[in-house]
Amino acid sequence: MLIRPLTTIDECRRVTALERAVWGNADAEDRLPIPLLVVSITRGGILLGAFDPAGEMLGFAYSMPGIKEGRTIQWSHVLAVAKAARNRGVGRALKLAQREQALGMGIELIEWTFDPLQSLNAHFNFARLGVVVEEYQENIYGTSSSPLHRGTPTDRLIAEWRLPAPHVERRITGSGAGLIRDSGVASAVVVNPSRTAGDWLLPGDADLHHDARRVLVEIPAGFTGMVAAAPDLALEWRLATRAIFQSYFRRGYRAVDFFFSSQAARGQYLLAKK
Image (cartoon, rainbow, N blue to C red):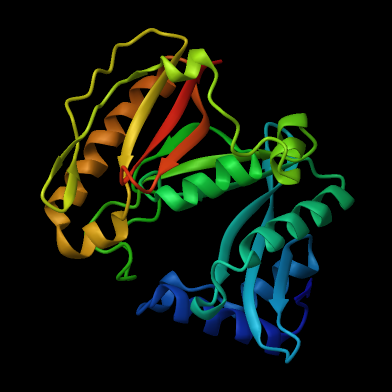
């Protein structure tokens, strides 16, 4: 697999074609405008493509320059991997290449949004990359035309990837992933213990007032399938977890890890007091 910067209009066209294939965007307003890509990458944006030996585009990652608290950052807006190339490490390779390019530009922070109810994305972001989260955005993108998101508000967590941080180094080298939970984490209270009913996990009544140093927040696995097959339940999960994250973030917690169990069909965010 080859990962390299994308610089031409034709390559930008390939990017938007892959974006449509991945998300099924029907509306042009939900897609990356090619002129914006072209201008952005001439002024500090990072656009990377992953290719197989035959030159087929397997995926891409796009980030744009931003400013946070007076310092330059990269805002990673889109990462997409072709369906046929998933589970082959393409996404991770693109993120690591993005990190190296940003560090080479003197940038130490990359941020992006992700759906708090997408358990595999959460696992990837925390366990494989080492992000932390302390900000929740409510319906940040408005109504989406993508069938993957249709019917639920586009609430998102904002990932902070602190590129030179020691815990990030540990996660990306594999020495920090899959660690056994210490006793403090193992005994952390679940603030919204879920329950199983039929094919789906139902949200439990949430306690928004725990004051322990660390707490756990449960989410279901397979949220995309839930959006399609049980939209009312998906909306219930969205609103329930929105209240939890907003309440705990306001009280000085941040998300520092994520634990996923395919057997239990659920994941758990670890929230810790700053």
